[in-house]
Length: 116
Image (cartoon, rainbow, N blue to C red):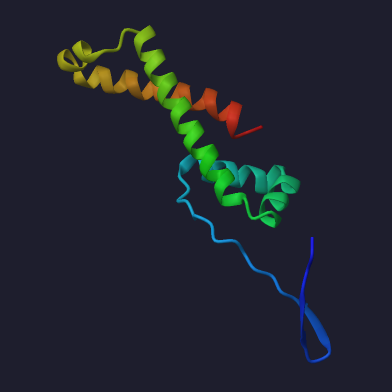
């Protein structure tokens, strides 16, 4: 690694250039992971910051967790026989059951991907 410097008065300052990178919007799960690593995984947090990979890391976590939650919701809904027929016949019951399933799915996936 070759570092070049520019002289400013009596000081030599490194010529640092950040790479052009895509900046992703971070959703709910990425933000939850960010808060967790800031509080409990400070070494990982600083490593991601120094290597300029925090945004990409959080985006990947966000996408992965979102997909896993959706798949688990679908699987649990099928297992519990919560379908379109129930939705048409009793929408309030359907919403209630789907909310319960979503909460269960999120709790399971958050323990696997966010709080580790």
